[in-house]
Length: 230
Image 1 (cartoon, helix red, strand yellow):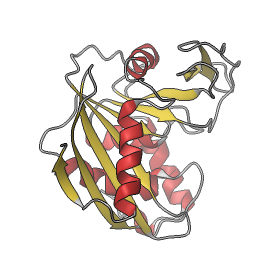
Image 2 (tube, helix red, strand yellow):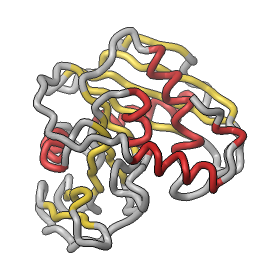
Image 3 (tube, rainbow, N blue to C red):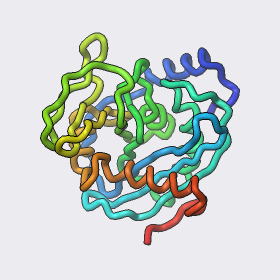
Image 4 (spheres, helix red, strand yellow):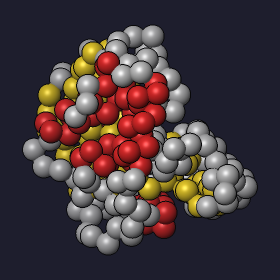
């Protein structure tokens, strides 16, 4: 893989355009027995990132274990290019897993990105694995606000009115989340899998637990490496 630490933003843009042509948006039809969640914790002014991937059984969402990696990165914090800070560490966490999940949910966007290359798509193409983006905020696109009841949703579309994701009210009366295919999934199956991954919180369990793990890791409360869940 290219050393992202040495890239300029124009060079990173060229890589995104190349990888975009490799993204496959297609229904996910396989069985899911194990689902993963990926997240990163860092200070935008720091060169250290803390990456984590958690594994959960599916559909009961019982934690199986988590893989944590600390990595130094030099690529700057630039909105729309966060994958160049995050993907190298996530790939190391991925390689550390003793078994790979059937689908990985990434905290961030998939094709709901100005160049259709959010972190979920970027990671999915490099890992050649099904991924879904689940983001807390919109990066790109337009939509109508979904109804206030749980599971109400609307389409997220690009400037050409082409669908690029779903705006999902994951819990009643809370802000929606933004779901988009990363790689080897499509809009309907990404939505279905995310709906099955919601429990008592706004965020789906895979990325919620990954978020908790990387923040605990950054605070020194848990150690680097792979650890089985208690």
